[in-house]
Length: 229
Image (cartoon, rainbow, N blue to C red; front, side):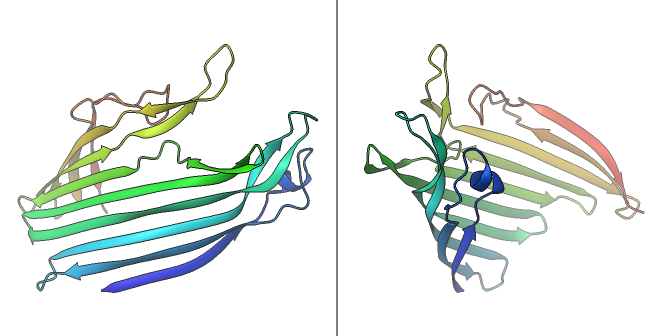
């Protein structure tokens, strides 16, 4: 299967951006042009598939907050351009009810074009978003009542900013990549009306941050019972 899509969109300025003390009644809407296309291949028995997708998004008249260091005036303007692109590859295979596998790799990058000192400057600006991300899933219906699955999520290096004292000037910092291993199991009773489950997250007890300065949960587990009337 070959597929493609071309679309456009817009985002109107907010009332605050138009009519506040920093407002600009002449603001234009942000407009975007989006394109994507891809290819999907199926196995003859339709138990497996491979899909590849590429996308590109271009935004113009992006709204930015402007500060004049000479007059100390501040207001919103249409200034920036944003261009993002990337691809995703997904593979699925269902060998039997005993084993299903799924893997997804995605790559995303983008840059903003803005005016600095009267000149156009472009740089990568997707903060806290990894360029590369990989997910792997394996599930198995071991018996009619017992189901288990495992997931691996690998998140690549990301960029973030922080504002250290005493100047509180913005500084960029890299957040390390990390990998998470999760496990889930459930057992069904009473013709699938009652399910007992357990969910184990971050089994390897990885220490990582999605936002600089804020920790995330280490190894944690929970379980429960679900009943369907």
